Image (cartoon, rainbow, N blue to C red):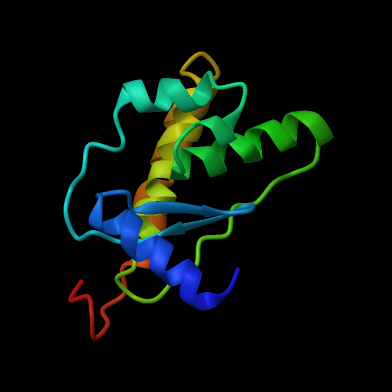
Length: 135
């Protein structure tokens, strides 16, 4: 694996509207600046109910599901690191992780509501005005 091969693979997948690329435990996401039907209830269910995430296409839900599985296995707090340049889609990736976690938590525990109430705070932190984003 080298940088040229990674970039070629990411570009190749992106031209096929596959914005996520798995690189070991790292998920690389390319912001398409378009809406794709990647965040439906059916897709959440597919990742939530999967016993083998590596059999599914790379997706931000895979990262959230892996965090849940590791939390259940180790009983230790988990973190998801989302990094990138301005306008790269960090806030959207965070929002989708939160949506997945809220869906998995369910409304019986009221956790779903609490998680989704975090979104405005997270968006206000992530939506600073920059050269690339006029927020």
